[in-house]
Amino acid sequence: MKQQRKRMAPPIQNTALLSPIKKRQCTVPHPLSDNLFKPRERMIPEKEMQMRSKRIYNMLPEVKRKKEEEKKKVVSQTNRLRAELFKKKLLDQILQRNNESVQESS
Image 1 (spheres, rainbow, N blue to C red):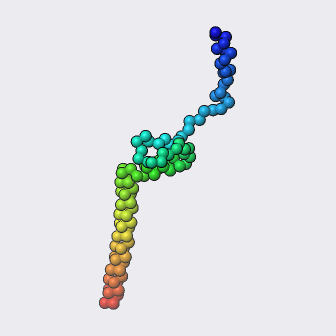
Image 2 (image 1 turned 120 degrees about the vertical axis):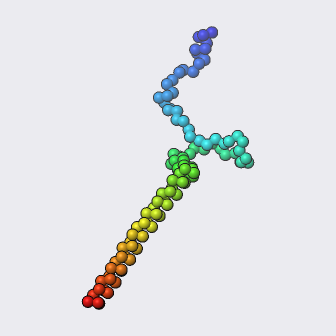
Image 3 (image 1 turned 90 degrees about the vertical axis):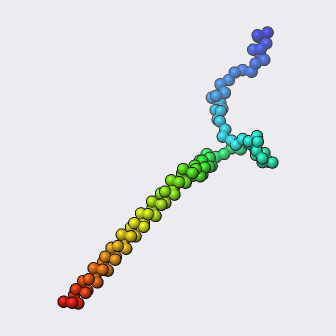
């Protein structure tokens, strides 16, 4: 009986060397999905997965808050620089007027 099993069993080959098994990354439809058309499993390119992850990450409230803070920082920095420029121009105008009035009176 053991001899019959040996004869019936296919010869064992090293299949790992012949064809490497690669784990597939595919979408699986959710069982409770409202979608009338069941999406089939499909391969998703790595680039697309990275873009999706990045998009989802950028939608997080913490990330949005951080970006808003950075924008506010940039706006306040530019406002500060504009205020300094305005102050310099104003001082220059005042000093020029004072110099002109001093020269006229002499």
